[in-house]
Image 1 (tube, one colour):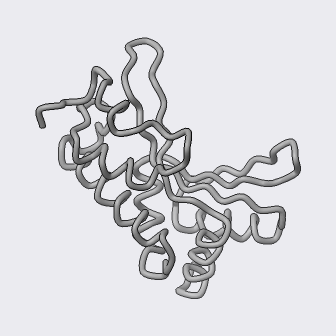
Image 2 (tube, rainbow, N blue to C red):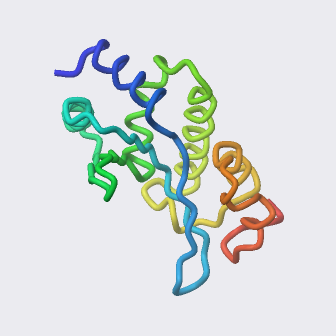
Amino acid sequence: MVNDTDLAWLSAVIEAEGSISAQATTRKKDGYLVLTPIIRIANNDNGINDEMLRICNELNVKATAFVKKNGTTTTRIDGMLSVDLLLVHIQKYLRSSKVNNAEAMRKFIQLRRNKSPGKFRLNKFNREELELICSIRTHSSAKTLDEMMQYPNVDIDD
């Protein structure tokens, strides 16, 4: 059974070894922007990886671990429902910039959920949603707000 110590521990691992972000891809069949919330943790310690998977499993959060060529194991939690469920449990324990990322991600997910429960990807993105995502996707190769606004499934008037 997952307790507060487990949740605080997992939060610390995410703070130190993880990221809270969104994967931005272009769907080939129609050129639509697809934004997938993601929590990613990279680590080489099998004990840590096993414990992360145990906690996620007990919380009914879908988590996948895979080993990269360099031997690092990456644990990935992705999708609106899984990311939101995990953030609900760990957000109060976060202390670093991940606090802002978690808040922005949960707000993004809530905005998507309010449009059409259970059908997150079928609705156009609006500027507010894209601004939230851009606030947490800060690496140099991340799509800019202006680039995202050009996609056919973005409502520039909203």
